[in-house]
Image (cartoon, rainbow, N blue to C red; front, side, top):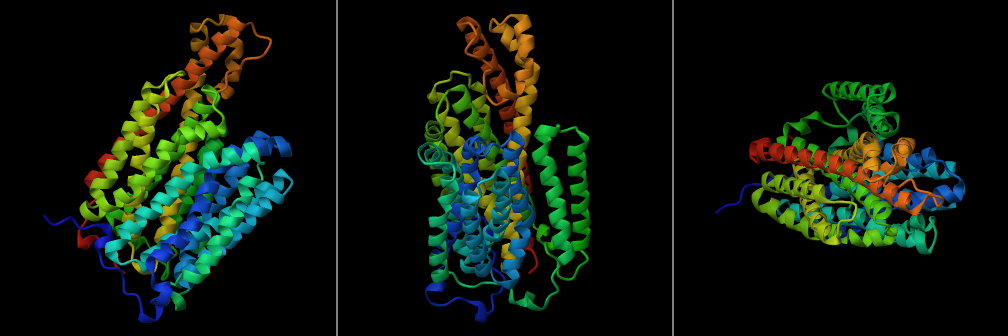
Length: 531
């Protein structure tokens, strides 16, 4: 029985003979190994920082707001420049901008450790994010250019595996370094990885680019509009948790960003050489793949965030112990990414994207059965389902996005995929944490009194709802043992109420994503975008 055509089965756009790599630079698997180093470095860095933040705060005297900007400055710079990084690679050379990204990211990482002030850490995190935006999209752009269509899907599967595993390993690596060395080592570890990546990449990476774009006028206005729009949207998203989702600041920032992005889309349809060609979205597989990519990381990063709070604050595990207990998620991703790529090659993303989303929905719904004292036997099955789902969606949606773009736009497509990923992750963390906070606020007093805390004392503890939303029970050494136990029990139950609300919403969104992917994705040759 013939297999359904997939995103990678369409012939790529013609690559001029002069641009075709030769010798060892013609080996696509060496290219995959080279870009995996840079990808691993960025993925690892993105998830270790949350572990280092408490130590950064203590060492540098940083406030909670300062620590938020350690994350947000990186995220804003990264999101604003990803598509630009891909476009620069397409036009001037993907190898060139990948190497610039690796070198800049490595130097910025070392500078963060040497900064000596919270202001320096925040500034260099933004620099790190910018160079990450040069690096990330060109990894997929180079794979699209060097791999033949029949092997591109498997290459994306391995790429997705590296990305998923590096993100999932971050809490373990970060916990070990912070616990046994210092917080600076979380950033210094990028130095040896970056040096190896540079040396190996210089030796094996081919130069690929869209030679036809050399005489085109660069879309400066498009760059400005896209950067401003994404900055405003992401800023509104990351501040929504603290400002409130209905506050004027949050709604104003997001609305302003959406308006600017609409103006950007209007401009891109009229400029001769657009930064982001709107013709790419003629492919339904690419368009739906972009949305599913965002939803994939909405669930992954949002769930990992509160799972780590649950394991450390509620269950009392150290960062390393908590990271080890999430290993099933990492191991499942290792299996699922190449498996998802193989299934996508055979049956198309119409099978693998919905299947991956369905597995994540199952994981979320199983978490509805968690309690404050659940055994580990109830935890690892949803971790495995989540890892399998994330890895499968990562490979199939990346293939749907980059595989449906012409080779000449491979970097831009990689930037689009990475932008969706970052915005989805930012939304996931902010929205799900906000849901937990809201649910904790509405149930804390009732849960405390149900646990045996006197009504007057329970009312007085209502102001500690922010700490409870982070899984922390508001107890003190001076409390009588019986009262202390009751406060811990009530606080943890209120936190679990919030977790149940968050996983229910995430699970429903996964079901919607599965249905949209199953119904909307069609793989026919006519859907390939015009080169």
